Image (tube, rainbow, N blue to C red; front, side, top):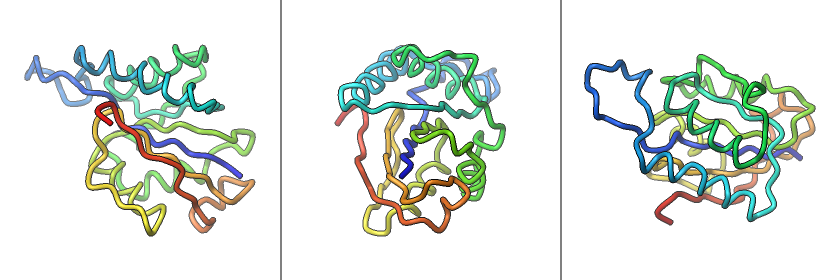
Length: 163
């Protein structure tokens, strides 16, 4: 069994409209929400073996704040370009390519792609929109990530800062 935690980046700043979208930082609420959501996972005794992230500044910072709470090494974060402005297939490809040594993986990405992806995972669970810093968790009935697409998935939980 594998577990996947899909996390939308925390709240970002729109304070500087001259910045390209890729370079938008987190705002103060985002900097507060990310460690809080990581603590919620830790309170549930959830381990994370691998942190995988979009390279965009706001996703990167969210991931780093989770790493800090988990006392994980930031230099071991796996950055994948296709998780920025992701198409639905990007998530399936990224997940299927994960190293099998990882049992519990957190992926940090963006809307609308992350919402589209979570809504394809469990047929009886639908999310209108992944709020900023939301976590959608599933368990996958497989021992190989390459089987992710066809493996049975079980919804574990959905949580977000205002919940």
